[in-house]
Length: 303
Image (cartoon, one colour):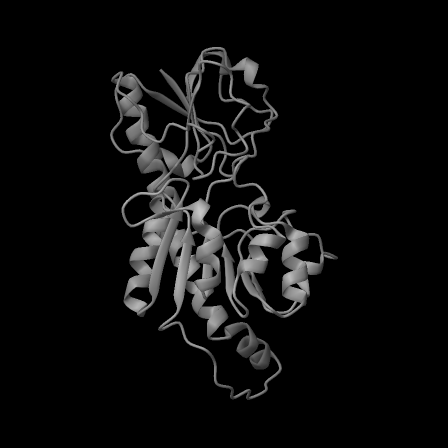
């Protein structure tokens, strides 16, 4: 059973593997470690967008594509029939949840303002708002949404979660029109699917209360960029974004200069512990496949 992974350092992080597994490193490009025709289990490069210099039809024996990303949107519909696509749900929970909490606190306590003052060597003593007492709406109640909930609970906030379908303690996204006007902070951690693409449009933003903060740690296309630029330019809303549409953001894009925006370059999951967690999952999946067991994180309905 031949396995390809994209990182040399991953070899030492897979754990003890089934003796039938042979692991080779293929980071992408034209230089191949061996014949791709007998690769059964492939881990594409992190954040690969589904395109590869090596056509998928050369993987004649491929059975599993195991992603290192939590989102599978760029691969859905591009995987050959009979090949199981799995994502890395759970791997990015802690890092993304940390980013969300950091973004909320940094925005509410106006850290970007103070950083600019520091660069200018200017003592800008100013009182700020606070997170305590705020009502936070998390749209997306998967592992990352739950991780955000756990980390925000000690901050004395009122938390509401929404997901595609209602369940105990979680509202359905169909209830968002009623939930949005009550929220001081709206956090997006939904997968990018046909149902969520553009869900944050002008009507969605108009329902948010004046002065509310929108936090996007999902995917850029979940938010209508033009509508968001207009809302921020008016000064009515604020935002913290780790993802944008387009991405990377062109130097002349209006998002760079709109007021009330904290922007990071898609780094929520880019932390030192990423490979350890990701390849721990990959090793478990390899062993499940070798033993004929059911794999976890199989992508269905786009995520």
